[in-house]
Image 1 (cartoon, rainbow over the protein chains, first blue to last red):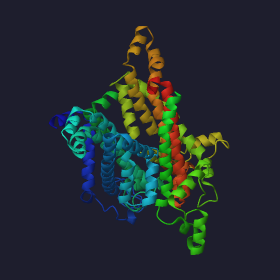
Image 2: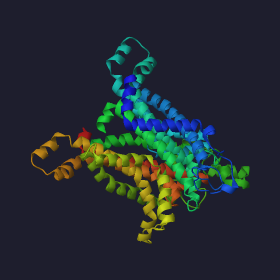
Image 3: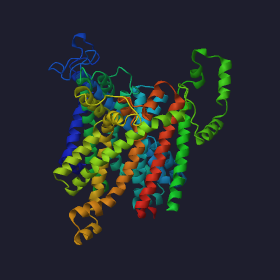
Image 4: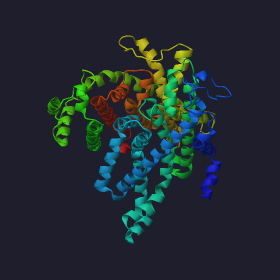
Length: 278
Length: 313
């Protein structure tokens, strides 16, 4: 662990990603205390105000402070990202592990289910799930979580297949260790590296997906200060106030870019095979 | 090769069946009863029973699925609940717009990213590589809907060079069509270019270290010939897979861009059908996009195997 941390600190792009992401996470958690204004407070006298020292990112069509809304938007993005990725990570890893470990017909059936889900572009599948569940923050997390299950299933299956025939797994088998214990204690720890990398990259995709769904009006509730909603509302006022759409977009880009930098770095450090390929 | 195609088809068939089941399930999972929605305030029990019988909704689920599947296989995707139009016709009418957007974005991305990917691989860890890597990272990180919005701000609202939205068919006015399609194509191609660039770079890096490239160099081939003739031919094979996947993906993935630029494509049709609760239409769009994706992948896999005989072994 100490060795890994030492290597990570020497990987500049990954460290940059980690630092920016951590700062954004702190901003997200501390948004209620860090926001200079109430993100919902409408001030008629400040409608469509351009950026000033008092309103760093300007105000929107209802006179609300964009900076405070962007800070609160980070809470939503990070919450959706973490919970959606957790759902996808657990469900996908379970599917991939079972498919790889049991093989045969179980593998064939589970792999086809994963193939079916893969055939739908992620945003379209998320839209269809949202049509069934209805718009809400919880449903967005569930929908995005389901959409990213297949990628984790594929990563887990591929990695587990390469570990399955290792001598320590065979030894555990011959000692009569139960299948569940072998999967949990011997296979899972050995496939965690590619899963961690995938989780970091999927966190970025989840932030993008939430913003896209909310942008289309099919994500979180309309008045929530989500980055996607801020951008969508800002688009309608672009001729008069470019800043309404500009800053939420910068926030999304920064968060996604940081995840990608960290994800690429972690892949370099944890997954030497992938490093060789890239 | 025929054996390989047969094998790929055997894997694709259960996937297609799974897609059909999922698309069928969609209409039964959405909240509310479709007949109640159709009748609206004129709802009465007698008419509801009649309509259920007419649409076969009173039959067991398996029978309903089989009847629906038979219709789908003959090209009948159902009827819109909103417009007096068949779902298949609505999709076919909007397909050219989405196809033009998807193919245009991939072509634009190829023109930019393949030379950039090659330059990056040829000068690894130097300025062109750093530039290309930065472009690649930004490309996958900038949301296409934000890029689209900012392009509209600059080229439509500030400079006034291009329209901010709308569509005109190329058969009516080709130049007008290109003017309407340029910004959405640019917005969508950013991420595609980034993916192709990263793939070209890594694939090229792998190929230029191979023995046959050393052999070509040893036989006196010019560096330009080594790159553009010997290396690129093999390096582009995995790029082809990515291109196929991207076109398939963009058939449904361009939904937000179509919405921003009010393009009458398939993605916008999906959003409109969700907002209007036109579920047969949504079901048709989802089925069409997923099935197209499977077929595009199948064609790409066959092409890949044809270009790279090792795959067939």
